Every structure is written in structure tokens, then in C-alpha cells.
Image (cartoon, rainbow, N blue to C red):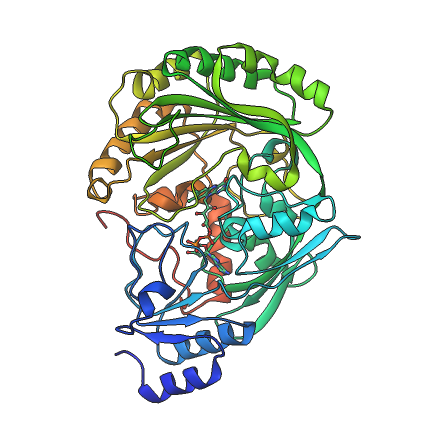
Length: 461
Ligand SMILES: Cc1cc2nc3c(=O)[nH]c(=O)nc-3n(C[C@H](O)[C@H](O)[C@H](O)COP(=O)(O)OP(=O)(O)OC[C@H]3O[C@@H](n4cnc5c(N)ncnc54)[C@H](O)[C@@H]3O)c2cc1C
């Protein structure tokens, strides 16, 4: 035990949420991650129920020389935490909407689905990610590229202030007026700065949009992929789209029309007039007969139905990267790797179209990585943990090498955090100057590395 029993007893008496130590029966559930392949086993877990609990946990950790990590949903958990303190944020559930100002104040325990639902009551919407199940803060700290990205930009562009418990255990506000260096870093710089307890987040006025997804048969994959690639060359900024080649396993829980099938899905969202939206989408609708799905008017409250990401916890492995562009040769290689008839333990290979508003920085700038990228690529591995340590990383390395002419030198931490143990990926998530400024800001706010980030050694290091 790397801490004194007196200091632990004092922590228990100060904190209003649960305080657990290694060996306690309730600890595994408290630190359970969405990615069940990662089992955290910290020395101490503090279930923060209020901001003061976070501060007390940080002071306890500092007094005992322990590192502090934050767990919201565990969607980003890639490596088990086996030391120090984990602060869980799910009880920090405060959420309020100022409808007039179109601003949400979001406690760190909220997932996007809560904010989407609360904002929709006022005809407003947050610029979210694909999945409503992902945590608001962890996602925003990495930037956040969602189904409306080309029209509205990175989600972090909408964060207007953060309340942060720093390494000293003090609470500070980071905004365009206060602690501006920290504010710059938190919009895209991800971890190693402190624990965010809440953020203020600008909402867009949006009651509905035109969007959804269509599924096409395996035989139509080449035609659909080529049509989508051509579509993205001229798509207006009002349109954000993506494609995914998905190999659905033959499991009972997969709905019948998809069970055991390899398909391509096209996802589309358009902000603006529905007639214009349908005209823009027409080439993708016409390219082949879709056997499932719908693209049409959707309430903003149902935005996560565009990607329909799974919400059940389970083992997961992914590798993501950004692309500087794609062309015919890229599509040919992509089809050779993931196309019809290929045997590859990647159950989904997804390409998203970026650009438009994602390329434009916010006034004052922010740390977000990926403004220069035109597309993203995410590969999701077969959900078999036996493949996670060696087989999938090796396959992903090989595919990345084959696609290297199109891979951007820049990436985005939300798309690479699943594989930060790959040497160099952490550093490459930001342009060199941004990376160095982030390191300086981390040194200034956390000189003794209370918040290690990334918190595991690179593979082979
Ligand atoms: C199904 C799925 C869909 C996704 N879709 C998208 C998408 O569309 N666009 C996109 O950009 N990303 C997407 N992601 C990636 C996602 O944004 C990251 O994994 C993100 O880190 C998840 O944050 P979390 O808080 O839910 O997860 P957690 O694993 O709980 O947290 C991840 C990290 O965020 C930091 N963190 C979380 N909360 C706090 C806090 N309060 N204070 C300080 N640090 C904190 C910590 O460093 C923590 O390790 C997706 C991931 C999954 C699994």
C-alpha cells in the first residue's frame, strides 16, 4: 500500500461519493470500462459526486505520491491502469441549458445522449460525435469529429469554458478570458492537465436535419465506394458523410438482414433545405439498390441513429488515422484490403469525409489535431481479445504501410487513442509546434506529473 491508512481514512471522511481500495468487492464495477478487454485495477478509486470530491482525491494522491487518472465511460480505455488513483466522474451529472444564450453547462458525468435530449427540448443541438453513449468531456478534450463535422467543425470549437481541478487541488476556470493557455490546450490537447469537472458548451439552433444511413450488398461495395469517393470531391459544406465496410458476425444479437453479412453503409447528414439535401444525396441513393436503412428528415434528437454505434460494453480494439486525400488508386487499394471476398479480421473499416468547417481554426486558436486532414480512417478489429496484443496491431501496421501515400502526417487523438502504445503515434497526433506547446503547458500546470499522459510506455519502449 503506497499510502497511509490515516490519509485514506481522511479521504473517506471527506468525500461524499464512494472511496474504494484495491481488493474491495465494489472496485471492479466502479472502474469498469466500456471496453471490457481493459480491466482497471488502481490502488484507490474515488467516485466523485461533487467537485470537492475531485479536489480531495487529487490532494490525497499528491500527498501520497500517487498518479491520478480519470474515467468517465471507458470508451477510450486502451491499457489497464494498475497504479495510483482513478477518479470516476459518472456521478457528476449536472446539466443545464440556457436556451436564450444557446449554451449548455455540462457536468463531467454526462454522455452526449443526455445533452442531445435536453437541448432538443429547446430546438437546440450540441455538435456531437457519432455515438450518444460517449462521454462529453473525454470526447471534447480530444477535439471531436462527428456526423455534422463539415458544417459545424470540431466539437471542441464549441467549448467556451472548463472548470478544472489542477494538480494543486485548486479549481480554476479556463476560458477565452481566464487561464487562456490552459483553455487553448483543453480544446484538443486531451490529457495531462487536470480533471475537468464541467464545461460550458455552445449549442446550435437545429430542430431537425436531413440524414440517415443506407446499407448496400457486398457485391455493390466497389460501386458504392467509388461513387462516395467521387461525391466527396464536390460535396458542399452542408453535407457530412462517411462509408463503412462492415463484416457482421453471424451472432444472434445482430438483426437478421445484417447477420453474417459483409455490407457497405453510407451515412449522410445535410444541414439545410430538404429538397436540396435530397438532390445532393441522389447520386449515392441511385448507385445501387439499398437493402436496408433510411435517409430523410430526422429530428436532431436522433442524431446518433446516423451511425448507430453499438452501446453495449464489450471488448474492442481500433486503429484510426487521418488521410490527407483520397483518389482512384486509394479506392483500388482499399478494396483490395477490405473489399468483397477478402478475409481480414477487421470487422469495420470506416472512412469519414472531413474538411469544410473542420479546417477553420477558432479565434485565438486551439490545440486540436487534424485541421489539415481531408478524411479519417478507422479500423475496428474482430472483438476477440486474443488478437488485441499482437495480431491486430501487426495487421493494422501492414495496412497503414499499404495506405501510407494517403495517410496524413497529422492525426487526431480521439482517432489514435486506441493505439497510443504504438511508438510515435502520441507525438504525431499534433503538429510538432502544437505538441511542444502542449508539453510546456503540461509542465506549467502539472510540474510533478500527477496526471500522467499518455499513461503507459510505448510498445517496445
Ligand atoms: C463507439 C465509439 C464511437 C466514437 N465516436 C467518436 C466520434 O464520432 N468522434 C470522435 O472524435 N471520437 C469518437 N470516439 C472516440 C472518443 O471520443 C474517445 O474514445 C474519448 O476519449 C472517449 O471519452 P470518454 O470520456 O467517453 O471515455 P473515457 O475512456 O472514460 O475517457 C477517455 C480519456 O478522456 C480523458 N477524460 C475523460 N473525462 C475527463 C475529465 N473529466 N477530465 C479530464 N480528462 C478526462 C482521460 O484522459 C481519459 O483517459 C468514439 C469512441 C467509441 C468507442
